[in-house]
Image (cartoon, rainbow, N blue to C red; front, side):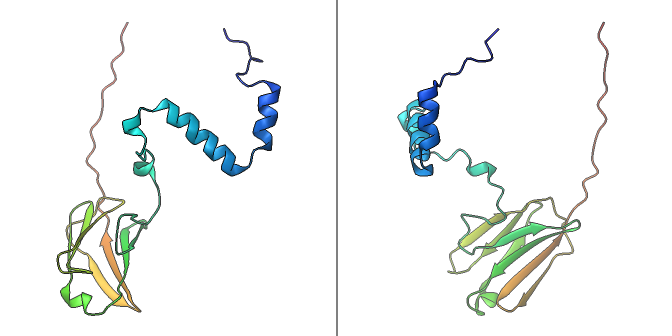
Amino acid sequence: MSPWNFSPFNKETMQKLKRMQPEEVQNYVNEVMGKMFPPEMQGMNFAKGFNSSSEDSTNALSAKVFETLDYVYVMIPIDDEDWLQKMKLYYTSNQLIIEHIPKSEDKQTITLPAIVRKKGSRATYKDGILEIKIPKNIDMQYSEIDITEKY
């Protein structure tokens, strides 16, 4: 059993931590974490997959993705109205694929926050924004799990 009043930090260390500025704390944490991970893992961003931002950070189009109870919306700012004739839009059950903008060889893939239906999508352009509205799919495929009791 470990003693409750035991702490790896003595009073002097605690006072030093309280006087530190946020930048100093960040540097201290980076230094400690740098000592914990091997050199080949130093540049990795482990929190990248857990980012809950509604914007796709790798998306050159800076699309905003959000969902309501019944729909998934993707809002894409359109810099040039000629893009509307050039672009091709496709989607799967969980991704939106945008081709040929801003350049003809470009292809953007946006992961959708929910499973969507095959039919019923629409795209409208207004005030420099392309709004894509895709109905969500209600996935009712579930199976019961039996619980067995062991004696």
